[in-house]
Length: 216
Image (cartoon, rainbow, N blue to C red; front, side, top):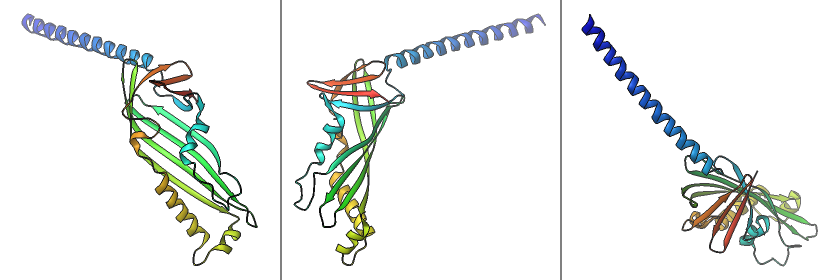
């Protein structure tokens, strides 16, 4: 009985030692997690791009859509940024979205218009080493919805095609012309940015380039 008790005590002591080691590892891992969360304070937060090189994003971004104004267009296309949202997840993934509206008016008579709602959905990854961050955009999905108004004015100009069919054709044409290459869309995959985060601002810099994101 003494031998059995001694063996049981040794086993219990061994299990207790393993348990304590495990707790220590968990504490160390928890400390590491806490340190990462403190250092990468921008993780898990919704951001919007506020400016690029000191220029407001809603002015900077639409320049890539500038085209020669058609003679029958009344005014320059009106651009409205509806939303831009970016989230750096703790697992190293990056998700983002850009939505804006382009509206074009034609003098007629009668006056008629075309409105395009353009949405980009971005999937990517990021890696951080010290105060540098490298962002890779892996996929950019584009969705375009076209609305022609007044419908009866457009219908009067069409032959063998409905307004709905024309809207679909125009949306497909825009998707073909506006689909970017992921590697240089918003973030350049070849660049290691220096990052600096405050409570409500994330700044990414490279050489003389600066992108400022604000917490939403």
